[in-house]
Figure (spheres, rainbow, N blue to C red):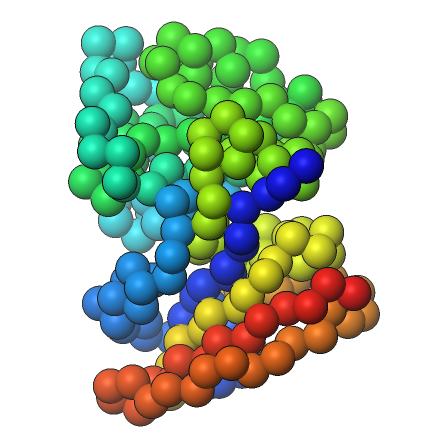
Length: 225
């Protein structure tokens, strides 16, 4: 089964963390926009953290009458969310953003039935792929087959990045290295990659570029092990 090209993109500290230091969001999304993609893949945990940071109330669920129209502009990317546990009960705050065509949720057979019913009721695009958790290879294949996605930019934390790397699904890692050391002071600080035991493919450096304010851009291609 063919799958899209997958690029992991993030801003990291010098010690490899994605939280616990000030992130230049303007620079982050400026570079992110230059990465070819027609879908952005993220996890529910990343979006829950973003909602908390922005003061978005995620208690309860969206009213039935508030179903945003999908963007007519097919040039916009899909926002694809891995949410096997059904943690994101409110999606209108995401569906109303101008950055994406619409939200597409990846579920598994273990996703609570009431959550899948909620997605149907609010006419949220979703796919059930996998048993206990989302089957990422199958999900990427389905994105290519059903939604004609050819390139995915991953904007996620260490858990999802680690799962993609462990499965041999990452083609490129594109990093902005910030001039900060996050250290170990913040409880629950997030690494770029978590849960990967041992090497996962050979990395080849293809670009080093100095950005503003002492930031660096590093791009690596990933050879499958």
